[in-house]
Length: 384
Image: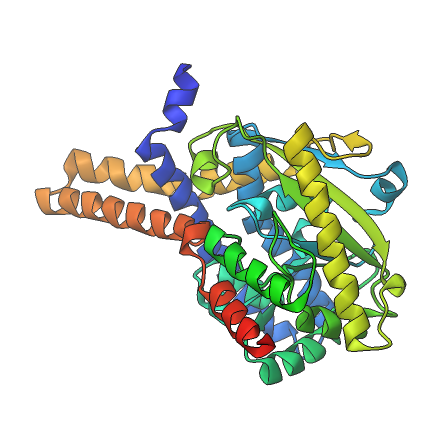
């Protein structure tokens, strides 16, 4: 292990990265809050500003993945589809199998200039997560309570605004139809529902929940031209695909398969036809991942989308803005400060380490909700 790799593994470096992320996030979300005064007068200007502010913060994740850890993403898609990705509004369908499948998607989004205008469908509680949740709120992500009568109205309302952007500001909506992150326990519950209802058995993904997808397709037809069906895989012999691995500077290789589907090809004559289409999509996704397990790659042409230096420059900017005053204050305290002041610095460092670890834990699969287990059990009982 080289010296630089050893430095990447030091706790002090992780604390410094966390400090830069937190302080820059506070600045960005404060500016987002200030931009709200523009909302009543010019929503297009508000959205333009917040697309760039969101990039200023979220690009720190892609910096960590690309420049700090040296990770790479192999994109599998047709040459024709590659020319259009990032140049139109898209509904991105992903399965949530790994802690950082979202990070692989964000790295590609950064390289294709899509990152700042990426929105999620997420749990209501996520908008209260400091910094990243606040930014999702100001950039108008869709937050759901998992109470269908409420959620249906929220999706219908929010999608009316989804494409209200000036020319050249393309929206990427990120939907995980499984509704939760993959675990073996949730997979077992999902298989029980598949068996009870006669659906194809899925080895690598969970049975998708069609209600939110159906309402989304109904609201997006005529506004969004494309669905991007995405499947992510990581080599078994590489580092664990977790955010902690990235922070420790371990280089990952993400394999990312993207299939561009015209949204008009999705049947919407009945809800059941639309649900059947989604289940068939996940069966193809499951077969696709099985091929990856067997061969170590996805089928079709592969591409390495070129790096941009934008996220590196942005991180250097934030490092200078936040670290120069930090080092000045710490240096002054340890040279001329009292013992109490020096102890306070140590306490703050400990608190920072706890905050950083908590924020990392939000991305970990084993910290996910019980949603997949509970709802699968309920559906299975209904089918009996």
